[in-house]
Amino acid sequence: MYFELVSDLTDIEIIAVNLSIRQRGVLKARYGGGRWRKLKGVAFVRLASGRVRRAEVHWYEAHGVGRKRFKIKRFLD
Image (tube, rainbow, N blue to C red; front, side):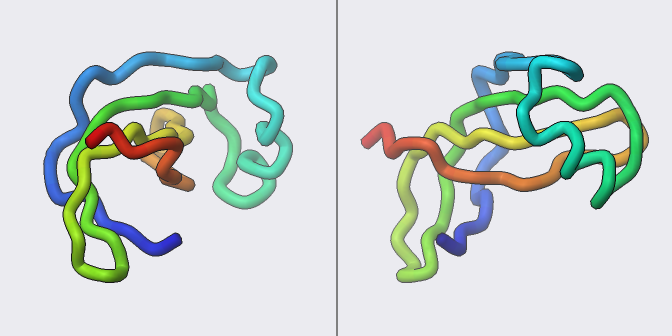
């Protein structure tokens, strides 16, 4: 599903850190090492259809690498 973030992420929470992340091997191979964290937050997103909705978004983040692999988990409106 294609989407883009329209607003800043709010209500950010850490879900998992380093060894407790299932995709850690894939992340290290594709983007490099670092202390990977899985996070979630709330933001307004623009869908491929052009519609803007409020959604819970999950992503991975590591120092020096940045935010990677955003995905929408559920819509909040």
